[in-house]
Length: 351
Image (cartoon, rainbow, N blue to C red; front, side):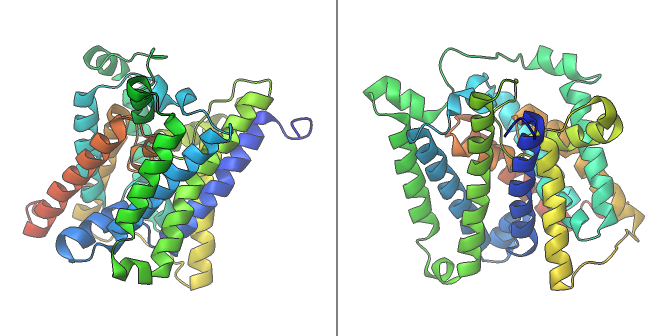
């Protein structure tokens, strides 16, 4: 296959297909991190939060099913092979969640809105991607590394399954299958949720899209001759990667990240057009745009510190049972809750 389609292009194609599913899930299934938090805290409706549970449960179960079949090795992912700082995870998660509330959406949601014609989302996407790179490899990178040193290729994989294996010799794949089943059971324990087949379906599709990235890039890494990383969907640093590729395509190659970002926009555009919801929108309130820009500027560095956004940590890292994932997801939800509370009380709407 690599004779006519390079490894980088194959990875981009896998990312594109999974991204399309995620874009459809956002527009058709209304899969939204901030929306789930807002519904739960202020709408007395936990179905979208349970939808997140379905996505996590399916991602964990299917990723560890792939591990059992030899189609994926979680230890090759950055979430298990890189040391993590609880302080950086909490700080980054709070920043990301708070910025998400100010912006009204996360990175995945901003791309989905862009696919629906929202030009405000275009501004947010640019700021989020650029601000992430400022901290990831730009002027503030040295400060970040000084404050939170990064250790690659740690001796012990930073995952729950491998800690349990060291303690009681239980295979990591079995741990993941058990944990994934438990999460699914909790998410589907509500009768209202079980009856909402659309949310169950799209939650499951999101989880499978995450695993498709792991399995696809693992296959490329183990059968190809290049040095393609094993990765799956995330939507902050990859947005910066896509901006960089757009500027340097003639001297650069495609990647899974670029395919994933473009895929979400394409999937959201398809759904918006078919539903008759596509329309160009701009911001008429400078105060609103200012708030959204500030939120995007917080989400970029926040995701870098937390080693992932709501999708990157909340789903991709969680699918490997990374130790950082639950803490990061709780911090993101807490930051979003704080931001929503301030918005509702009017604190952030005043000049």
